[in-house]
Each structure stands twice: as structure tokens, then as C-alpha cells.
Image 1 (cartoon, rainbow, N blue to C red):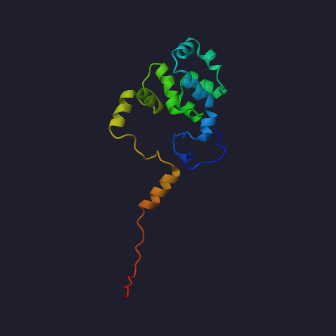
Image 2: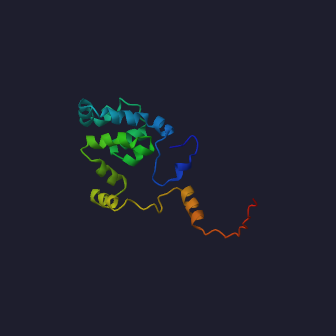
Length: 152
């Protein structure tokens, strides 16, 4: 996605912040996913996925990501995680299953990681955040402060 303007959070590895810009970009993906809340739409989609997707204003990249169930790509192209979860549910998958796929692990390994406190922030924080953390970790030079007594 080409961003109209850079954001402080654009440099977080593997993270696609759902902001106003992404919301506009992903309108078609999200409306498609929300349509899956109705049983008749889920049935129509499962009967002929490519044909059903023609009802929505999707780019070829968005259509391809949906058909291939590339959830991270859907997020990058403007999908909202809560909406895309409806596609996973239509396929009979839990949110935990989808999260495991999105992190490149098995559902069992993903569950163990989350129960163990989640993923380490090392290598997963923004460059700006790493820079701030590095500066904060450096010991500051001690300066001698003269105290003044108040005269009363």
C-alpha cells in the first residue's frame, strides 16, 4: 500500500494499523466480510466464491487475497481484523486458528505462546521505539546540582 503520508507507526514490523486511510482502501474487503454475517450470503459465497466477490468494489489484489485466504495481505490492503475474522468463521475456523496462520505457527504453538505471555517485543517494535528504548537504557551522566537555601 502506498501511504498518502508517512505515519509514526508505519515502521512496526508485520503490523498494519487500521487507520482512516486503510479504512477507505479496504472498504470493499470489509463490506464483503460483513456480508458474511447473513446465512444466505455465506451459502452464496461458498457456492461460488469468485462470482460472489463481483458484488464488491475490490481490487484484483484484494480479490486474490480473499480467495487465497491470505489474512495478513487482506489487512495490508485495508481489511479490518474483526471483519476478516468473519471470513475465517465462514470457513469454520476459530480466531485462534486464524491468528496462528497469521503468525506462521500452529494453533497449538500459538496458544502456548499466548499463555506464556505472548511474543517478545524484541524485533517487533517500531524503529522509533527501539531508538527511544536505546536512549533510555543509556546511563546519563551525573551532574552536580548545587542546592540553594531559602532565606526566609
